[in-house]
Amino acid sequence: MSRRRRRLIIPVVTLVVAGAVAAIIISLQPSPPVVASACTFGSGSAGGRYAITPTQAQNATIITAVGQQKGLPDHAVTVALATSFQETQLQNLPYGDLDSVGLFQQRPSEGWGTAAQIMDPAYAASAFFDHLAQVPGWASLPVTEAAQLVQHSATPDAYAQWSLEAQALAIATTGEVPAGLSCRLSSFGGSTPSHAALLAAATAELGPNPFGIPATTQRGWQIAAWAVAHAYNYHLTSVSFGGRTWTPGSGVWVAASPVDHVVTSTQ
Image 1 (cartoon, helix red, strand yellow):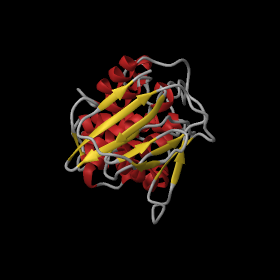
Image 2 (cartoon, one colour):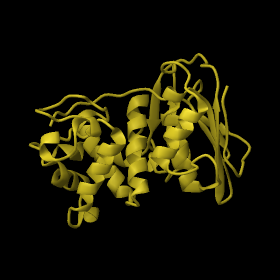
Image 3 (cartoon, helix red, strand yellow):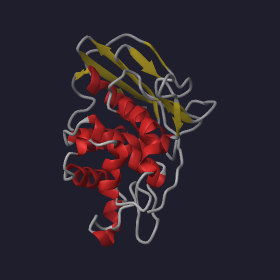
Image 4 (spheres, one colour):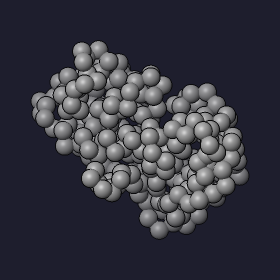
C-alpha cells in the first residue's frame, strides 16, 4: 500500500443551536474573496492544532458520516481516519501499490470491491468499517493495532504517528465539540451547484433530512462540520448552528442567534 499525505480546501458554513436541540442554516451565494484556504481543528493544547485542506476535510467527514450511520463508536472513526492519513493523506487516489486505490488503498484483487467501487469514498469507508468490526476486541485496541489488523501493512507501526491528529479530527467531525472544524477559503470549486445537489449529497452521506429537522447538539455539530467541509464544492457562504455562524471569508465561528430548525437557501 502506498502512503502519501496531502491536504485540500473547504468552503464555509454556520450553525445555530437552541438548548438540547439545534438547527443548521446554510446559505449558498456568489463566491466572496478570501485570503487563504485551509481547514483547522484540534484543541491547540495537549493534542495540538492541526491544518488540512478542504478536500481532506471533505473526505474526513464522509468517513465519519459512514461510521456514524453504522452506529459505531467514535473510536472506529479515529482508527479509520488514522488509516487514511497513513495510506493517502486523506486523498482519494486513483493509483497506489500494485492495484491499490482510494482513501484506504484497498485492492480489488483482494476482494475489497471493484476499482470503481473503491474510488467511491463512502463505499471505501463502509468496507473499512465492515472489516474493522470483524476484528475481535478492536474497540479496546490501540489505533495502530486495530488499523493493522484491517490493513495488513508492511509497516504495521506506521499508523501510530497519526493517532493524536486522527483523534482530534474525529472529535471535530463527530460533533463531540461545538465548532470543531473551521475552514477559510480562497475560492470555490467549479460552477455553482444547485441547492438540490447539496441536499442530495447530504442525505446520501448523513441520512434523511439532515437540514430539515431539529438536531441534538452533537448531531447538529456533526452536520455543521460536514457542511463546512463540503462548502468548497457546494459554494456555501454561511452555515449556522448552536448559536454560532461560520463564513468562508473569516474562516471562524462567531456568535449568532439560535434557531430550532434547519433553514437552507440558495441563490
